[in-house]
Length: 182
Image 1 (tube, rainbow, N blue to C red):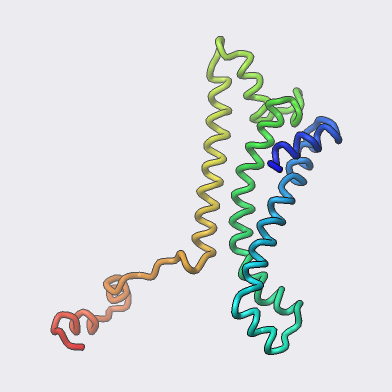
Image 2 (cartoon, helix red, strand yellow):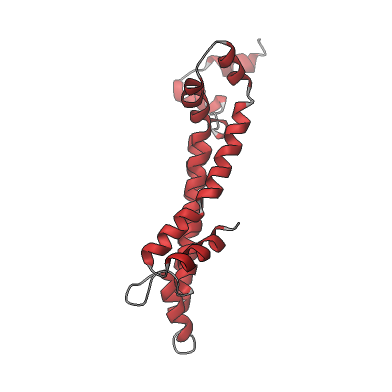
């Protein structure tokens, strides 16, 4: 079930409001997050190192907390940062529809709704909040990619030999290459 649709259902049950919208969005992302975590755990559970730990007699708690959890925490952090951008967009959607933040308070969704009413008089009232939502969401997604690249060791790039030689002042590797010695 899409998180926004689940948010609509929860708001219909709990009522309108800012806190209700935040709680509904938080609850609506629980199934997606648990599904992602479960699939990662099931993949890691079948790995060779888990079988080796079982054969060595490690307890299930040790296998989970020492071996499996550190391997799934990096993708989960990346997933959480991606979900933040989606949650901001979802909250703006709820506020735009009048289900989230209400009139005295300001939110990007309420600003967009007010801008729709004044579209012909001042179009900036519509486009500026829309551009802000887009920029924040794209920025958070780029930040998420950076976090994933930083935390994932397989995506790190090693320096080339020329940079390594230059950094450490080693000339032997290049001299060996130039002379054709092995």
